[in-house]
Image (cartoon, rainbow, N blue to C red; front, side):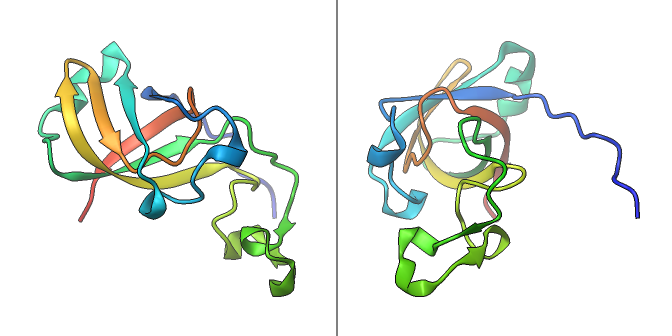
Length: 133
């Protein structure tokens, strides 16, 4: 079996927040009280139409600082649980480091969306936003 052709992704924006190290970043959006701002690049600003304050959005990020060559991890760093393949975990290290987060929209100002529940580092590339079902 041969590999597929390469996939190309273009970031639609970037996260701005006060989180600058993995050690101080919440492990998941559902336990985070952090806020941040999604800067949507101007060429994608029309895609924001319909996003509303108070709604929950699902954001996909490219974890640009994550290792891509680790295939097994201890879930949440707990060695008592044994090594597991990254596909069975939410670890940020994986062949394609895509993260999924759900954020509450606090404010919208031009091409910026202020959100709560931030669980990614400052300057993490945003690859897509979807409405939560």
